[in-house]
Image (cartoon, rainbow, N blue to C red; front, side, top):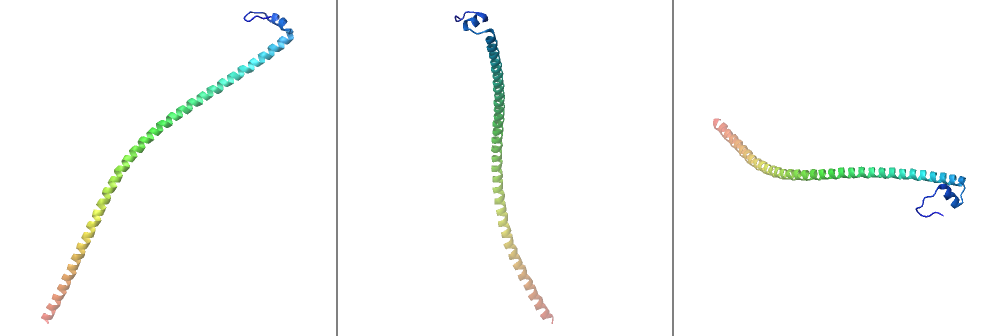
Length: 138
């Protein structure tokens, strides 16, 4: 009988369990094989864990890069929004200048039309005077 914590030899264990030396060797080989398989599985799981940790770290790096990109893009959007506001103000000022210029052109056209009418009237008056002079000369 084995007492917990007491050290006994393999021979004594074999005698106590009634196992033969061959059975012990077979069981030992089986346990050794299972132990190797468990170690292999443990290593595999550790590698998978390391791989997952590496992937997680890579994802975290990518996320950090994307967050930085987002901050940069947000600043770019603010900058562009500010520039758009300035351009809209400039556009409004230019539209006002164009409207004023169109009004000025319209006024000048009216003034020119009036001058053309005066010029036509002056030509007609000259023609009448020339006709009158020709009649007097005759």
